[in-house]
Image (cartoon, rainbow, N blue to C red; front, side, top):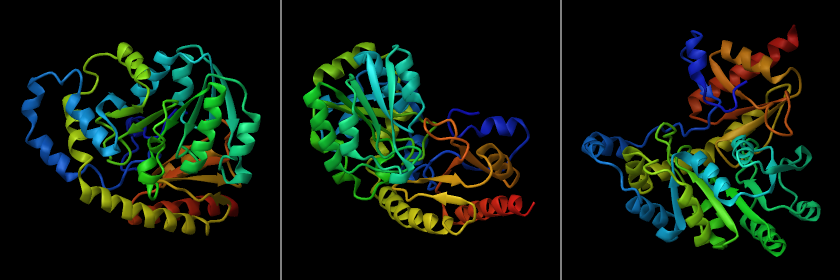
Length: 357
């Protein structure tokens, strides 16, 4: 089984072409036109090394987030930021709120951190019960929270993040928050943990999802603790962000037309997708705050449904390898209306066809 969504290459090598990829959660608007234009007119930048300190890039990211240059570290995708942070901070014991992104465990395994998990519960619609969490919290060095959560689409409001962080600070526990999907959340600018400006919190972001450039690889971290930044920079390889990725960060963050169009699209489409999915027999879906939705299969397992969906030209994410999930779960991206209709129709047929056999 693939560790992540988006591995359509293996399927293509098997002769399965023209598939709708609903296993990876990428903005269906595609690469912003303004960025494409900048790339076409900027091939000359490939003749030079990027700025090893990425000052202009970090200035742009800082301005976009209302912070300072010295609060920003950039990397080759959010994954580099994640591994870099864990290598620099070396937590001996880490608690991950799960299910969550598989790379947290891999990053922590590289430093031999003891890993504990705290479950999000289906009966709470995958929302974190903050008071219970704080009551049951074991002593550890670091808590990792994916917010919005991947794969459930749940979201912890800022006031609850503040409550969690306040308690963690008292106990000497740091907080790592993955906000890779936060820009899909309504009114996200007023919900990001950046607003707390806490030295105790490290925030990870990516441009991959919202701006539809997974091939560019650009992620960044935000910290208000200069010592954390120094430690991370000491482990960082030079020039890990290529020139076109740097150009992406300096261009796309200011593409207001693209941003506004995306925000309007996701606000409408996630509501429509959830409501339509509720009409399909033998599945259960959960309200989502982002551009993907978790699906529980009330009959049949995830590997069977995945194969049948591929036969219908759709790749879904088998979610059985997420901590606390099992073969009853798949994850679907939310894309444009035309393709969403096709995908929901295919899923309905798969579930109904098996039911009639």
